Amino acid sequence: MLRVEGIDVYYGDLQALREVSLEVNRGEVVAVIGSNGAGKSTLLRTVSGILRPRRGQIMFNAANISQARTSRIVEQGISHVPEGRQIFPTMTVLENLEMGAQFPRTQKVQQETLAQVYAIFPRLKERRSQKAGTLSGGEQQMLAMGRGLMARPALMMLDEPSLGLAPLLVSKIFEIIQHIHRQGTAILLIEQNVFHSLKIADRGYVLENGQIVLSGSGRQLLENPHIRKTYLGL
Amino acid sequence: MDPHLALQLIIQGILLGGIYGLIALGLSLIFGVMGVINFAHGQMMVMAMYVSYWLFILLSLDPYLSLVGAAAAVFVLGYLIQATVVNRILDYPEAMQVLPLVAMGLILENMALLFWGPDHRSPQTALSLQTLWVGPVMIDVSRLIAFVLAIAITILIFIFLKKTNIGKCIRAAADNRTGAILVGIDVDRIYNTSFALGAATTGAAGVLLLPLMPLSPHMGHDFTLTAFIVVILGGMGNLIGALVGGLILGLAESVATLFLPATLKQVVSFSLLVVIMLFRPQGLFGGKK
Ligand SMILES: Nc1ncnc2c1ncn2[C@@H]1O[C@H](COP(=O)(O)OP(=O)(O)OP(=O)(O)O)[C@@H](O)[C@H]1O
Ligand SMILES: [Mg+2]
Image (cartoon, rainbow over all chains, first blue to last red):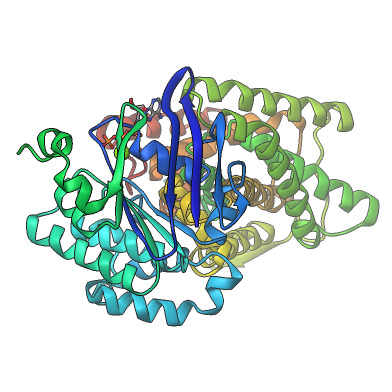
């Protein structure tokens, strides 16, 4: 479904990604792990069209989206739940969710999608008239994910959804990701919580210094000595 | 002191303050959405005034009837300025954003000078000299109409931002640019629309001022400054603050004529600015950044 083919991405003169290739197939959960500054967020920003690859290309359902506008990319079915949540703090929870449905395709089924989102996140329904900026960190993460779902994505990309959350909430977020996946959305998950994410992932990639250094099934990676030593501290 | 005169000045001040509020609303909207201070704000207002003035001279169209047209003309002007100039400078440091916009103000001002000459012009509209007596207080009819329309336009803009889809997209882009881009909003287009809306707002305010004061190419500065002071008073980017700030400044300027010669009017606004900066730098209602 998504095929990233050998992309190089730069910030000015600084190269952040080197010949990165990766693939997400229909119905998969794919995890990308890597330490701080490895280039994980850069990868998602490039798929979303916020950054442009200088070399290589990005294909989504046989269309080349390397130079497409972000709005086109979202419309075609890729939702990006970004690092730091990036919700709209002075707007209500409901307004935030409504903003997730920007296109005729998604607006037509907006009420239905909203009901589904509320079913997944009952807390958002309780808080729907509250300003999003007054939500707790965990609730804001749920809102960011709910807003992403409002776009009815075929592929949902999540950038460190568990960052800064209490352990109980972290488990909850991972459960929800699996739930979203079971309902038919492919997941591209970026995490520093290596153990949790590789456990739910069909496949995983390891990104170091802007390069993919390892890839394999979630289980293979969990058993890999390099990963056990570097990322799991075992 | 004559209490009737004081009452008169208070009412006049509040009525003028509503228009100040409308001018400042446009500036505050632009700042709130893009973080840019529109140093060409007053000059844009003057453009709308000339459009309305010429429609009056050429077609005898009363300014209240050409208000929408003049505001629309400045809407287009604002849209183009944002699309061609301001969108390119958004990521620059604030000090560097000042120059292109000041330049834009100078260009507009000199265009007005070129097209319409340096003369002061006062259109004699049907209502421009009519007055109304409420007990001992005399009210200019055109001032009252200007106030009522200014408040009505302000309310319409609030409703627009609160209820319509474009309005919500504007608020979303103001709240979080990255978030707005990622849900698929065309943020550049929303920015163009916001700047245009801010410009149209000040344009409408200008048309309301037309029966109240002589029009000249150089009057733009003062209004850029007035709007700027009002916005600081109310809180940068805070729209309610802009309205209340406008009322306060209008009132203060008007009442001050009891104690000061009218030519020293700006002493009042600057003093108010200094006091606010000293005691409540975030503005009365709090602002952005
Ligand atoms: N806007 C930017 N301008 C310049 N360099 C940047 C920018 N954003 C990121 N970088 C650099 O690019 C590299 C990759 O950053 P990126 O944010 O993709 O890392 P990450 O893997 O997401 O890290 P983290 O786990 O901390 O979120 C880093 O060296 C970072 O310093
Ligand atoms: Mg990151």
